Length: 240
Image (tube, rainbow, N blue to C red; front, side):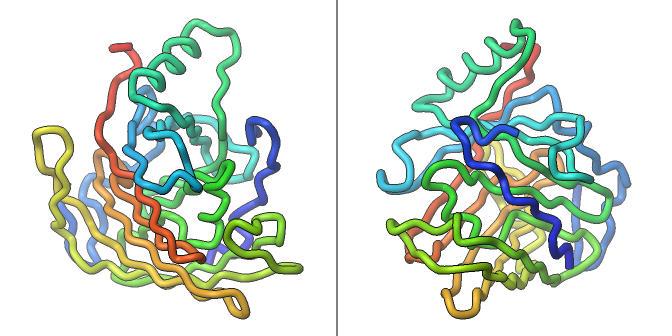
């Protein structure tokens, strides 16, 4: 399912380029990337210094097509503080052409929400984990991804040729509480197992909320590290 959905990102300096129940469709029938634009999302990064020295991941959604056909655009930036990330948004608002450290693709439709995780610098290791993904009408679903050996690194694992990861997703809780600021929001909790023949296995956990998208992403990597992204704040662009 969705095999070949992912197109390998060119690695360069900027790598540019509600309530739910099991098996229930969203009642508002309005899931669209437009619901997430004009706002910036700030995540606390929990990872050892080998993976990242930055503390904050900023996510931005854009309502135009990615270089991956059929996908809209998302952008990632990495900062030492929320304020540093907000400066990027302020600068882009006044610039003729905006810039972000990493730009990639997302699919947001009424029946699914699929996105590339951060994959710049040492976060390239996340190519071997399940990507954040939910199908709203199912309790369980599968996803396959082909990837090349340029995603390998001696810091985690190396191999020759192509590999195929096979990920299985399962909803385990439709009312998982997540603390965002001073409030608790209800999320769908999804657990995944990924098998990569002749390479290894990985695991991931995702919390999805209809208003904020994926608010928590936990990756247990191919070399047994843990990387977490936890949403801590969202800000309207007009407020910056």
